[in-house]
Amino acid sequence: MGGEIFRIKEIKRQVAEIEFRHFKSNCEKVISNHKLQSQHFRELDTAFTFYDLSHDSKHFQVGFQKRFSGYYNHKGEIAYERGTQLVYSQAPSGHTACMLYPAKSNTSNVLEDMIFLRSGHFTGHQLLSHLKKDLNDLEAYLFVSSTDLTPKWRPKLRIGWLRRTHPLQLDGQHVRPKLFGYIGKASDFTFRTMLISLFKPIGFILVVIMLTALNLSPLVDILNK
Image: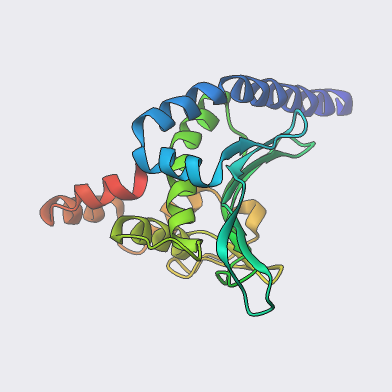
C-alpha cells in the first residue's frame, strides 16, 4: 500500500516534467507572436535586447539585457540598467513557480525585489497561456521600473494591480498582497487563491452583476490580457 502511494507521487512528478518540457519546446512560438503583435516590445528589444537565459530543463528565464544610459551616476560611474526578467522554475516536486523581476540600475531602483506571479502544478498548455499574459507584464514592468522610461497609464495600472494582488519580495522578505489581506506562504499562492479572497466577502454573483452594471469589462480585459 505504501509503495503505491509513493508511485502515484512519482508519476505526478514525471508528468509535470513532461508538461514543462512541452512548455519550453513551444515558448519560442509564443514569444515570436508577441514580438509581431507589440510595437513597444520590439522597441524595447532594440534598446535592451531580449534574450533567453534558461540554463537547464527545469528553468525558463527570458528578459532584457543591460543597457548603458549615456550619463554618469553620483559615483561617477557610467549609468546602466538591466531590464526586467521573467522566470519559471520547476521544483523537484513538480511545482512550478513564476516570478517577475524589475529592472535594476546603478542609479535608482524600485522597492520590490520581485513580484511572485503564481505557483502550482500546471500543464504545458496552461503555462503557455500564462506566458502570453506574462510577456505583457514583463513589458509593462520595464516601463514602470526603468530609470529612463516614462510609463503611460496602462503599464502603471497593470503593474499597480500586480503589486496589490500578488506577494512581493522586499529586502529578501516575503510580503503578502495588500488588496486581499491574503494570509499564507508565497508557495501557496495561486490565481485561485486570489479570486477566493476577492469574491468571498461580496459573493461571486454580486461581483458579476456589479461589473456588468458598471460596464467595467474593458478594465478587466486590460488587467487580464
